[in-house]
Length: 263
Image (cartoon, rainbow, N blue to C red; front, side, top):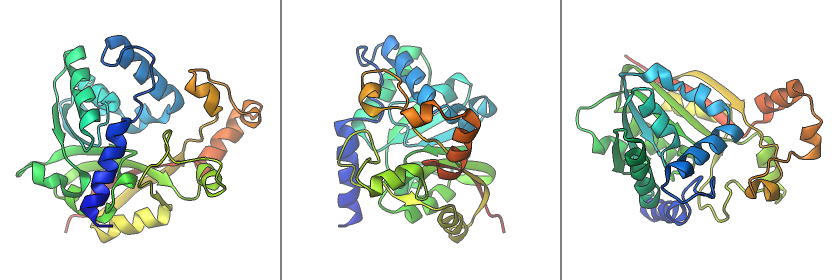
């Protein structure tokens, strides 16, 4: 399948049900809706605010690749970043734009894809390029890395999350007990080993500053869909220290910090 067709399949998938669109029962587009989406997202993925470190980017330029419906986006803007977001899904982007209107904040929100993101910006660099849970859905990760590199200066940070191959969730997927996304039929959801990420970064003239693993989802899916947070019995009785050790070694999220290699 050619890359353009693959990208269209990914776009259609997320247009059909934007990521986290079901995180609230409130009217989509209302302030109550956006508040609940944010609360739920960071409750089940509490590592995101620490990883993004929103306050660090005050008065600095931030580009988010794959802004979705704008949850991290709004927090970068609240913290005072000069925020730009790109999104492949038109439906997601429209909701993100509405979100900024609701909160009275400014952003530059554009439709585009990761594999040629540099073409949207002429002679422009960003202090941070951030992408959480997006690059594993792109058909050509290598092309995305090449494009992203053109938007970074020597002191820029590139922070991203991709799915981990050696993980608790991937083991369940392999046995047909889980799927990579909340909705079925995701056309591309690649997973990576730490070594694979380090090698791809090196091949594209990045240096890997840090890479760590986290996030095991402990809740029962049927209850979770009804906004009830009931843990599986084995996680409910597990000491926090042991659960955190499991996340560190078998988590679904690989959190990566990188910079460009400067000759």
